[in-house]
Image (cartoon, rainbow, N blue to C red; front, side, top):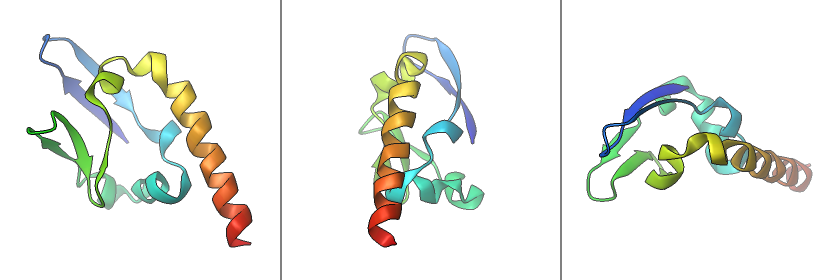
Length: 86
């Protein structure tokens, strides 16, 4: 679940998406084949996956500042989804 990204400012970042792949929407990307369907949407300027999933390019650029918050939010969504499905 790791991608190497290069940004317009020539910076690069290796991002491990595993911590945020939880919940009813993003959890589906734990399927490696689905995760590999990632594409660069040049119009949006960011990564997109099937089903309309995308991440703000600023968040990707500043990933270390955002990953803990996103992971906690996605795990909370997964817990809510699990309790509703039960």
